[in-house]
Image (cartoon, rainbow, N blue to C red):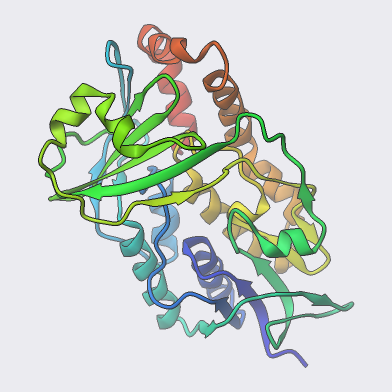
Length: 339
């Protein structure tokens, strides 16, 4: 006799999306999360157009600012692409987290304070954090303890590891596009999240300084001149993580726990929400999770891996000029990732 049908380890946006999907499928769910209240994280906070219909199907519609495209900039050239597939939305991580938590509570998801330290599996059940369930969805993030404890960690080279940081500034947004400013070593993502606030996220090698990176982009430094910070500086990484496989018995790795290429293309949440959906479908006897995961992430892995390799190579200075000179190709890549 199990306590619940599904244990979800991790109460971030992807974990809550997995729990909501499971409840909508008629399954009982307990979310195990050690942190109290809304969970913040260093991230770009841009929801791509494909993420909003996914959230709508879950009954979630977070408030934010419209995002109508992506703009690559290097101080000399600008490559703008406006979404054809519809608008995205800039949403504070805390706002998104709360909207998902409210929906989970509405659907009767149990939310339990605690941490999944170990997993014990049997033929028809799995036990974790004092609970027994038929399945466990590991949504415990980039540095997943569950992935590591099950021996699913795949070593990645330490060379070229990239880290992220993010801070908000109290200033009215000046663009409805996500601006990506390419400096010699880092990318700066500017995302409007409210009528009086923008988020600035930086992605670069270990030791990248957000303030120094902003100062290195005169256009951006001028826009933020005198604007007070509106949040604490947060960091994350290294981003490149791998898993040998996505399922071990009755445990499924979902979201960042299943492996992560890089944050460079900005659709990580949409991808995590899609993984949550196919994971729950697989529990009901649908397509195997490993096969569904590969299908759901194929475009992301192929396109992002190529861009990351270019960004970490001597080709880096050519990325924005190429996007400027080849707008149709640049737009096609953005649209493919934004779906």
